[in-house]
View 1: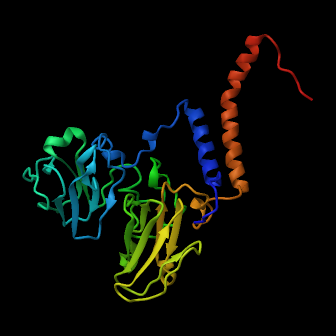
View 2 (view 1 turned 90 degrees about the vertical axis):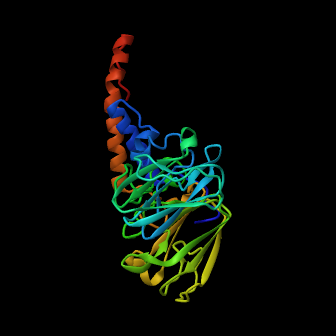
View 3 (view 1 turned 60 degrees about the horizontal axis):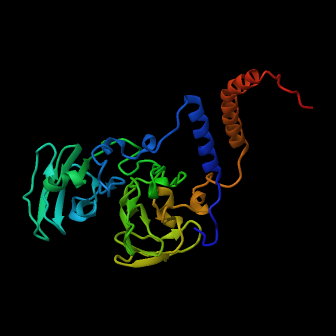
Amino acid sequence: MTDSDSPTATRRSVLKTTAAAGAAAATGTAFTGAAFAQDAGLESWFENTSNFDRVVDETGSSEVTVEVGAEANGGAFGYGPAAVRVDPGTTVTWEWVAGSHNVVADDGTYESELTNEEGFTFSHTFEAEGVSKYYCTPHQSMGMKGAIVVGDVDVGGSSSGQSGDDAGSDGGAADVDFDGWFENVGNFDGVVDETGSSEVTVEVGAEANGGAFGFGPAAIQVDPGTTVTWEWVAGSHNVVADDGGYESELTNEEGFTFSHTFEEAGVSKYYCTPHQSMGMKGAVVVGSGDSASNSGGGGGGGGVLTTSDIGVLAFAGALVGGLLSPFAMRATKASGKPPKNRR
Protein backbone atom coordinates (compact mmCIF):
# COMPACT_ATOMS: atom_id res chain seq x y z
CA MET A 1 0.00 0.00 0.00
CA THR A 2 1.39 3.43 -0.85
CA ASP A 3 0.68 6.71 0.86
CA SER A 4 0.88 8.94 -2.21
CA ASP A 5 -0.79 6.97 -5.01
CA SER A 6 -4.12 8.38 -6.16
CA PRO A 7 -6.87 6.10 -7.45
CA THR A 8 -6.36 5.23 -11.14
CA ALA A 9 -8.18 3.08 -13.65
CA THR A 10 -6.58 -0.35 -13.52
CA ARG A 11 -6.38 -2.96 -16.25
CA ARG A 12 -8.78 -5.17 -14.30
CA SER A 13 -11.35 -2.41 -13.80
CA VAL A 14 -11.21 -1.48 -17.52
CA LEU A 15 -11.71 -5.10 -18.53
CA LYS A 16 -14.56 -5.64 -16.09
CA THR A 17 -16.33 -2.45 -17.14
CA THR A 18 -15.99 -3.19 -20.84
CA ALA A 19 -17.06 -6.81 -20.49
CA ALA A 20 -20.09 -5.78 -18.46
CA ALA A 21 -21.06 -3.21 -21.08
CA GLY A 22 -20.75 -5.78 -23.87
CA ALA A 23 -22.80 -8.33 -21.98
CA ALA A 24 -25.46 -5.77 -21.13
CA ALA A 25 -25.72 -4.75 -24.77
CA ALA A 26 -25.88 -8.38 -25.87
CA THR A 27 -28.70 -9.26 -23.53
CA GLY A 28 -30.54 -5.96 -23.69
CA THR A 29 -30.36 -5.66 -19.90
CA ALA A 30 -28.02 -4.09 -17.38
CA PHE A 31 -26.47 -5.93 -14.47
CA THR A 32 -27.85 -4.80 -11.15
CA GLY A 33 -26.25 -5.00 -7.71
CA ALA A 34 -28.61 -7.85 -6.87
CA ALA A 35 -27.23 -9.89 -9.75
CA PHE A 36 -23.89 -10.06 -8.02
CA ALA A 37 -25.14 -9.85 -4.44
CA GLN A 38 -23.03 -11.76 -1.98
CA ASP A 39 -24.60 -14.64 -0.11
CA ALA A 40 -27.67 -14.64 -2.34
CA GLY A 41 -29.08 -17.65 -0.50
CA LEU A 42 -29.57 -15.51 2.61
CA GLU A 43 -30.63 -12.34 0.82
CA SER A 44 -34.34 -12.62 1.44
CA TRP A 45 -33.86 -13.51 5.10
CA PHE A 46 -31.63 -10.51 5.70
CA GLU A 47 -33.31 -8.06 3.33
CA ASN A 48 -34.15 -5.66 6.20
CA THR A 49 -31.18 -6.49 8.48
CA SER A 50 -28.82 -3.52 8.45
CA ASN A 51 -25.73 -5.22 9.89
CA PHE A 52 -25.56 -8.18 7.51
CA ASP A 53 -22.95 -7.88 4.76
CA ARG A 54 -21.28 -11.29 4.78
CA VAL A 55 -20.99 -14.59 6.61
CA VAL A 56 -18.16 -14.39 9.14
CA ASP A 57 -15.90 -17.43 9.10
CA GLU A 58 -15.60 -19.03 12.53
CA THR A 59 -14.65 -22.51 11.33
CA GLY A 60 -11.91 -24.08 13.39
CA SER A 61 -13.42 -22.81 16.64
CA SER A 62 -15.24 -25.24 18.93
CA GLU A 63 -17.12 -22.41 20.64
CA VAL A 64 -18.36 -19.17 19.09
CA THR A 65 -20.03 -16.18 20.77
CA VAL A 66 -22.69 -13.99 19.15
CA GLU A 67 -23.81 -10.76 20.80
CA VAL A 68 -27.52 -10.20 21.41
CA GLY A 69 -28.54 -6.54 21.31
CA ALA A 70 -25.66 -5.41 19.14
CA GLU A 71 -26.00 -1.98 17.55
CA ALA A 72 -28.04 -2.43 14.36
CA ASN A 73 -31.42 -1.69 12.78
CA GLY A 74 -31.71 1.70 14.44
CA GLY A 75 -30.62 0.76 17.96
CA ALA A 76 -29.63 -2.25 20.07
CA PHE A 77 -31.58 -4.55 17.75
CA GLY A 78 -29.01 -6.79 16.15
CA TYR A 79 -27.09 -10.03 16.51
CA GLY A 80 -23.38 -9.53 16.16
CA PRO A 81 -22.26 -10.88 13.82
CA ALA A 82 -25.54 -11.46 12.02
CA ALA A 83 -24.28 -14.59 10.24
CA VAL A 84 -21.43 -16.97 11.04
CA ARG A 85 -20.09 -20.17 9.51
CA VAL A 86 -19.03 -22.93 11.91
CA ASP A 87 -17.97 -26.56 11.79
CA PRO A 88 -20.43 -29.32 12.71
CA GLY A 89 -20.22 -29.92 16.47
CA THR A 90 -19.59 -26.25 17.28
CA THR A 91 -21.38 -24.68 20.25
CA VAL A 92 -22.72 -21.20 19.62
CA THR A 93 -23.32 -19.05 22.71
CA TRP A 94 -25.48 -15.96 22.46
CA GLU A 95 -24.58 -13.31 25.05
CA TRP A 96 -26.92 -10.45 25.91
CA VAL A 97 -25.26 -7.02 25.75
CA ALA A 98 -28.28 -4.68 25.60
CA GLY A 99 -32.06 -4.66 25.37
CA SER A 100 -34.84 -7.18 25.94
CA HIS A 101 -34.49 -9.97 23.39
CA ASN A 102 -34.62 -13.70 22.76
CA VAL A 103 -33.19 -16.20 20.28
CA VAL A 104 -35.73 -18.32 18.40
CA ALA A 105 -34.85 -20.80 15.66
CA ASP A 106 -36.99 -20.33 12.58
CA ASP A 107 -37.52 -24.10 12.40
CA GLY A 108 -38.37 -24.36 16.11
CA THR A 109 -35.34 -26.45 17.12
CA TYR A 110 -34.13 -24.10 19.87
CA GLU A 111 -35.43 -21.10 21.78
CA SER A 112 -34.10 -18.98 24.61
CA GLU A 113 -36.09 -17.08 27.19
CA LEU A 114 -36.95 -13.43 26.59
CA THR A 115 -34.75 -11.37 28.90
CA ASN A 116 -33.01 -8.03 29.29
CA GLU A 117 -30.36 -9.38 31.68
CA GLU A 118 -27.00 -8.12 30.47
CA GLY A 119 -24.47 -10.96 30.46
CA PHE A 120 -27.16 -13.64 30.18
CA THR A 121 -26.13 -16.49 27.85
CA PHE A 122 -27.88 -19.15 25.84
CA SER A 123 -26.09 -21.96 23.99
CA HIS A 124 -26.85 -24.49 21.30
CA THR A 125 -24.58 -27.07 19.65
CA PHE A 126 -24.98 -27.48 15.89
CA GLU A 127 -24.26 -31.07 14.91
CA ALA A 128 -25.58 -31.37 11.35
CA GLU A 129 -24.62 -29.40 8.25
CA GLY A 130 -27.14 -26.86 7.07
CA VAL A 131 -28.34 -23.30 7.60
CA SER A 132 -30.12 -22.37 10.82
CA LYS A 133 -32.00 -19.08 10.69
CA TYR A 134 -33.16 -17.41 13.89
CA TYR A 135 -34.75 -14.19 15.13
CA CYS A 136 -35.82 -12.11 18.12
CA THR A 137 -39.59 -12.43 18.57
CA PRO A 138 -40.42 -8.81 19.50
CA HIS A 139 -37.95 -7.27 17.01
CA GLN A 140 -38.00 -9.60 14.00
CA SER A 141 -39.92 -7.10 11.88
CA MET A 142 -37.22 -4.52 12.63
CA GLY A 143 -34.56 -6.78 11.12
CA MET A 144 -33.23 -8.50 14.23
CA LYS A 145 -32.39 -11.78 12.56
CA GLY A 146 -29.39 -14.08 12.33
CA ALA A 147 -28.10 -17.25 10.73
CA ILE A 148 -25.66 -20.05 11.52
CA VAL A 149 -24.15 -21.75 8.48
CA VAL A 150 -22.92 -25.18 9.57
CA GLY A 151 -20.25 -26.89 7.48
CA ASP A 152 -19.47 -26.48 3.82
CA VAL A 153 -22.93 -25.38 2.77
CA ASP A 154 -23.36 -23.20 -0.31
CA VAL A 155 -25.43 -20.19 0.70
CA GLY A 156 -25.19 -18.54 -2.70
CA GLY A 157 -22.87 -15.86 -3.98
CA SER A 158 -19.19 -16.77 -3.93
CA SER A 159 -18.80 -17.92 -0.37
CA SER A 160 -19.72 -17.78 3.25
CA GLY A 161 -18.15 -14.42 3.13
CA GLN A 162 -16.25 -15.56 0.11
CA SER A 163 -14.62 -18.82 -0.80
CA GLY A 164 -12.67 -17.46 -3.72
CA ASP A 165 -10.45 -14.46 -4.31
CA ASP A 166 -13.18 -12.08 -5.38
CA ALA A 167 -15.00 -10.73 -2.40
CA GLY A 168 -18.19 -9.93 -4.27
CA SER A 169 -19.30 -6.50 -5.37
CA ASP A 170 -21.68 -4.98 -2.90
CA GLY A 171 -19.62 -2.24 -1.27
CA GLY A 172 -16.84 -2.11 1.33
CA ALA A 173 -14.70 -5.21 1.46
CA ALA A 174 -17.01 -6.81 -1.08
CA ASP A 175 -15.36 -4.70 -3.81
CA VAL A 176 -11.93 -6.22 -3.28
CA ASP A 177 -10.30 -8.44 -5.87
CA PHE A 178 -7.27 -10.08 -4.25
CA ASP A 179 -5.99 -11.13 -7.65
CA GLY A 180 -4.94 -14.68 -6.80
CA TRP A 181 -3.37 -13.85 -3.46
CA PHE A 182 -5.49 -16.32 -1.50
CA GLU A 183 -5.74 -19.13 -4.03
CA ASN A 184 -3.65 -21.56 -1.88
CA VAL A 185 -4.70 -20.24 1.54
CA GLY A 186 -6.69 -22.90 3.35
CA ASN A 187 -8.37 -20.66 5.93
CA PHE A 188 -9.49 -17.80 3.69
CA ASP A 189 -13.27 -17.71 3.61
CA GLY A 190 -14.02 -14.04 3.21
CA VAL A 191 -13.12 -10.66 4.61
CA VAL A 192 -14.00 -10.29 8.29
CA ASP A 193 -15.51 -6.88 9.00
CA GLU A 194 -13.64 -5.15 11.82
CA THR A 195 -14.63 -1.61 10.89
CA GLY A 196 -15.54 0.48 13.89
CA SER A 197 -12.70 -0.94 15.99
CA SER A 198 -9.63 1.20 16.64
CA GLU A 199 -7.50 -1.86 17.42
CA VAL A 200 -7.74 -5.32 15.85
CA THR A 201 -5.82 -8.50 16.71
CA VAL A 202 -4.80 -11.15 14.18
CA GLU A 203 -3.39 -14.50 15.32
CA VAL A 204 -0.06 -15.65 13.92
CA GLY A 205 0.28 -19.42 13.72
CA ALA A 206 -3.45 -20.10 13.58
CA GLU A 207 -4.46 -23.60 12.51
CA ALA A 208 -4.47 -23.61 8.71
CA ASN A 209 -2.69 -24.98 5.66
CA GLY A 210 -1.91 -28.32 7.29
CA GLY A 211 -0.75 -27.08 10.70
CA ALA A 212 -0.04 -23.86 12.62
CA PHE A 213 0.58 -22.02 9.34
CA GLY A 214 -2.13 -19.40 9.11
CA PHE A 215 -3.05 -15.85 10.00
CA GLY A 216 -6.41 -15.73 11.75
CA PRO A 217 -8.51 -14.24 10.29
CA ALA A 218 -6.71 -14.34 6.95
CA ALA A 219 -8.36 -11.12 5.73
CA ILE A 220 -9.91 -8.24 7.65
CA GLN A 221 -11.47 -4.90 6.81
CA VAL A 222 -10.64 -1.91 9.03
CA ASP A 223 -11.10 1.84 9.04
CA PRO A 224 -8.20 4.15 8.16
CA GLY A 225 -6.24 4.89 11.34
CA THR A 226 -6.80 1.42 12.82
CA THR A 227 -3.92 -0.36 14.53
CA VAL A 228 -3.59 -4.05 13.69
CA THR A 229 -1.70 -6.18 16.20
CA TRP A 230 -0.44 -9.61 15.21
CA GLU A 231 -0.12 -11.98 18.16
CA TRP A 232 1.92 -15.18 17.96
CA VAL A 233 0.04 -18.27 19.12
CA ALA A 234 2.17 -21.09 17.67
CA GLY A 235 5.16 -21.75 15.45
CA SER A 236 8.07 -19.73 14.14
CA HIS A 237 6.76 -16.99 11.87
CA ASN A 238 7.02 -13.38 10.83
CA VAL A 239 4.77 -10.75 9.22
CA VAL A 240 6.11 -9.15 6.05
CA ALA A 241 4.18 -6.64 3.93
CA ASP A 242 4.21 -7.59 0.26
CA ASP A 243 5.02 -3.96 -0.65
CA GLY A 244 7.74 -3.65 2.02
CA GLY A 245 5.75 -1.22 4.14
CA TYR A 246 6.28 -3.14 7.40
CA GLU A 247 8.04 -6.25 8.69
CA SER A 248 8.24 -8.02 12.03
CA GLU A 249 11.03 -10.15 13.33
CA LEU A 250 10.99 -13.91 12.80
CA THR A 251 10.16 -15.50 16.17
CA ASN A 252 8.52 -18.48 17.83
CA GLU A 253 7.80 -16.63 21.08
CA GLU A 254 4.18 -17.34 22.03
CA GLY A 255 2.46 -14.11 23.04
CA PHE A 256 4.87 -11.94 21.04
CA THR A 257 3.10 -9.04 19.30
CA PHE A 258 3.81 -6.76 16.38
CA SER A 259 1.65 -3.76 15.46
CA HIS A 260 1.15 -1.47 12.50
CA THR A 261 -1.27 1.42 12.02
CA PHE A 262 -2.96 1.63 8.62
CA GLU A 263 -3.58 5.28 7.74
CA GLU A 264 -4.45 5.16 4.04
CA ALA A 265 -7.24 3.38 2.19
CA GLY A 266 -6.16 0.41 0.11
CA VAL A 267 -5.29 -3.27 0.37
CA SER A 268 -2.18 -4.41 2.22
CA LYS A 269 -1.14 -7.99 1.50
CA TYR A 270 1.35 -9.74 3.76
CA TYR A 271 2.91 -13.14 4.36
CA CYS A 272 5.20 -15.25 6.54
CA THR A 273 8.58 -15.58 4.82
CA PRO A 274 9.33 -19.26 5.60
CA HIS A 275 5.75 -20.42 5.01
CA GLN A 276 4.44 -18.23 2.20
CA SER A 277 4.54 -21.08 -0.32
CA MET A 278 2.39 -23.15 2.07
CA GLY A 279 -0.34 -20.50 1.99
CA MET A 280 0.50 -18.48 5.08
CA LYS A 281 -0.70 -15.16 3.72
CA GLY A 282 -3.05 -12.43 4.85
CA ALA A 283 -4.52 -9.09 3.87
CA VAL A 284 -5.78 -5.92 5.52
CA VAL A 285 -8.46 -4.03 3.61
CA VAL A 286 -8.39 -0.40 4.75
CA GLY A 287 -11.55 1.59 4.18
CA SER A 288 -13.33 0.55 0.99
CA GLY A 289 -10.07 -0.89 -0.35
CA ASP A 290 -10.10 1.59 -3.26
CA SER A 291 -6.55 2.51 -4.08
CA ALA A 292 -4.05 2.14 -6.88
CA SER A 293 -2.35 -0.42 -4.64
CA ASN A 294 -5.46 -2.58 -4.88
CA SER A 295 -4.04 -4.31 -7.92
CA GLY A 296 -0.56 -4.85 -6.62
CA GLY A 297 1.06 -7.73 -4.85
CA GLY A 298 -0.83 -10.54 -6.50
CA GLY A 299 0.51 -10.15 -10.00
CA GLY A 300 -1.34 -9.48 -13.20
CA GLY A 301 -3.88 -7.11 -11.67
CA GLY A 302 -3.00 -3.63 -12.81
CA GLY A 303 -0.85 -1.39 -14.91
CA VAL A 304 -0.37 -1.75 -18.66
CA LEU A 305 -2.88 -3.49 -20.88
CA THR A 306 -1.41 -6.60 -22.49
CA THR A 307 -1.97 -7.79 -26.05
CA SER A 308 -4.57 -10.27 -24.83
CA ASP A 309 -6.30 -7.50 -22.91
CA ILE A 310 -6.52 -5.40 -26.07
CA GLY A 311 -8.02 -8.38 -27.84
CA VAL A 312 -10.70 -8.67 -25.17
CA LEU A 313 -11.47 -4.97 -25.44
CA ALA A 314 -11.57 -5.15 -29.25
CA PHE A 315 -13.96 -8.09 -29.13
CA ALA A 316 -16.25 -6.31 -26.68
CA GLY A 317 -16.13 -3.17 -28.80
CA ALA A 318 -16.97 -5.12 -31.93
CA LEU A 319 -19.83 -6.82 -30.13
CA VAL A 320 -21.32 -3.53 -29.02
CA GLY A 321 -20.72 -1.95 -32.43
CA GLY A 322 -22.35 -4.86 -34.22
CA LEU A 323 -25.40 -4.67 -32.03
CA LEU A 324 -25.74 -0.92 -32.51
CA SER A 325 -25.17 -0.91 -36.30
CA PRO A 326 -28.78 -1.89 -37.22
CA PHE A 327 -30.00 1.11 -35.29
CA ALA A 328 -27.56 3.35 -37.17
CA MET A 329 -28.76 1.95 -40.52
CA ARG A 330 -32.39 2.54 -39.56
CA ALA A 331 -31.62 6.10 -38.60
CA THR A 332 -29.88 6.67 -41.96
CA LYS A 333 -32.81 5.27 -43.92
CA ALA A 334 -35.24 7.36 -41.93
CA SER A 335 -33.35 10.53 -42.80
CA GLY A 336 -33.56 9.68 -46.52
CA LYS A 337 -29.87 10.41 -47.03
CA PRO A 338 -27.30 7.80 -48.03
CA PRO A 339 -24.29 7.42 -45.80
CA LYS A 340 -21.36 9.55 -46.89
CA ASN A 341 -18.02 8.02 -47.77
CA ARG A 342 -15.18 9.72 -46.03
CA ARG A 343 -11.79 9.75 -47.59
